[in-house]
Length: 277
Image 1 (cartoon, helix red, strand yellow):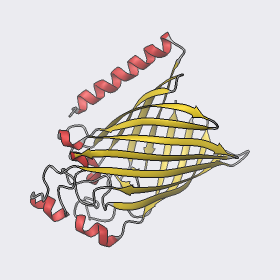
Image 2 (cartoon, one colour; image 1 turned 45 degrees about the vertical axis):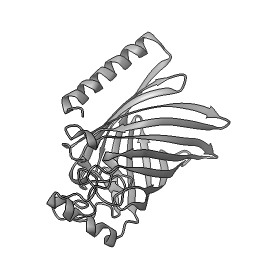
Image 3 (cartoon, one colour; image 1 turned 120 degrees about the vertical axis):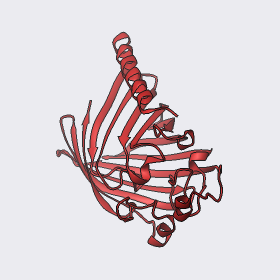
């Protein structure tokens, strides 16, 4: 498991290497962003204990369609996966056109710096995107094969608090399928957006008392609008899941806010401000 300093060093190395590559060959381009969000929601579930988060990403792109990137965000509560309040993901893939659509095949390595090795996990994905009239559409599938970070070690939150896992060392997989749509309103800076996703994974708690799919199977969705001025995008969206209170209660106190145990998967409005470069 990489420490926070190692992750930072990796990020700095990536940025410097990318800058050199861009200077030496016009075949490479660099893109990235810095964002502030009122709540970091991952597949409908808060990873920041319903508090704000600061996030950043940088990506190196080659004209062939190959790309690599790094994403980082602060975390709290449920989302820490046993580490400190830091998520640092490395991803890479290959995009290529097929007719009017674009296929994107890649892999994300989720890292939670400072935790045990069993907190990290890898997740391959495939995305298909294209346009239909004024709408931009994307459909994707992500499948993480069996890994300890996804395993159902604890059946309930009480087991985790007591430190008595029913299935120590267990490994599970995780499946996620989703669709996104964006509709730009002509002659305005506004874009309506929507998202629908479905998770199928571990219905209990992993080795550090968390889970990518906390109740096993559930839907998440988002409806919102963005407005852009130059390189700044202001967004507002309503995010929700169909996770029931009866499914959430057995996972308390883990699957709730640290202070009160309130739901971190119920509907909320999320504001975001993103600066792209």
